[in-house]
Image (cartoon, rainbow, N blue to C red):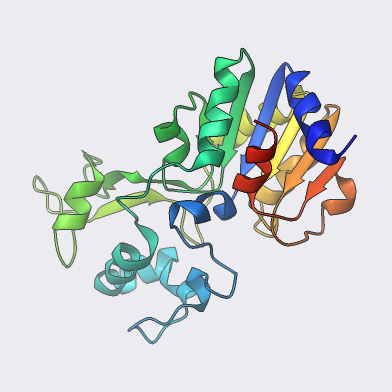
Length: 241
């Protein structure tokens, strides 16, 4: 039996599937990852700061105009659509599986594809809040108010609900993710180098039967997995439809 058939049988036999995704799952949707040769961290910008510094809490408040210049140009992809991998995961629910997604992505594509339970570990570009009165704003408001989106009520800065460097992950999201890891029988890890902590460390809480990893590059967790596919996730799912 080849490993594609093995993956199909693992998913067919699962009751609760935990799906843990990183930037790699959204690359086929036209959203660059962070660390590859063409990734966000290696792209040239007009700003004389490294991207890791730009997307930090300190930079946001000290250089707000420059932050939004980078953010709107490199971090937001309003027209991106779910690809076959997002749709495959959503379709598992229609087959009667209890599917829980935890993602490091901020693009909202899992929900757009139809997944009903998604824990966004690093937040979402689609949620934005005034840092003074906490009023909520949609993505369009942020994208169309230049150079800095200010609250139209109190004139506070409208901050994207994304986790920047120096900021902590949401405690509720962490708790729900760990709980799902501990109660699922299959863990499907997709498109992540598993280098970003604390999120990457969550897979150590998995207590189920099978860990399947799909990522173009090898990771330090490969030897912990029952199945490893170092290839494009869309191509993997096309082979097991």
